[in-house]
Length: 243
Image (tube, helix red, strand yellow):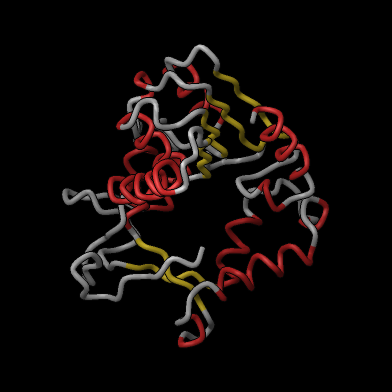
């Protein structure tokens, strides 16, 4: 989480267009994998993707068969129509840009991140699904990750908008990667109340995967943020058992 952010107007970060799409992100995964396998000498490396990161993992695995020993996709996003998210992202338009706008970064406040999380917990008493101190830690860490957060009122952190272009395509029904090329052992896992990584999308991905060893697990009482909720031990146990 401490990777540097390109400044606006840098060649890799245009100020007036989305940047850091899955195609670019998969190249970063390749750099990390090259370091682990060649510089560190690890013969086997497991790859774990979360949310948009599952698209990066899928793209890397299809481009580099044999480079990964096994893969876990937590809250996978593949390519199934999702009307709720399409409505939030807005009309893509002819350029393929989403409703986040054409800037390189979008800003998110702590209240906006909390509201995003709250929207998936199907009860008015949100503390029954997550600890208050964990919520506070997540929000503080998100703001603390961006050195420019305190220059905004209220404070906010930046995210590249390239991911919104990828998400718009996936939520429009276009496959984010070619699952038919993936043959390694793979685990799909999602929370049962996750409205971003839907059951329908996970089932489509599971069906498309060519892997002989493929499994899908649903975590009860979990949202897209299950790793921070009271259901987290169930998630971690499933991941460790697979590894």
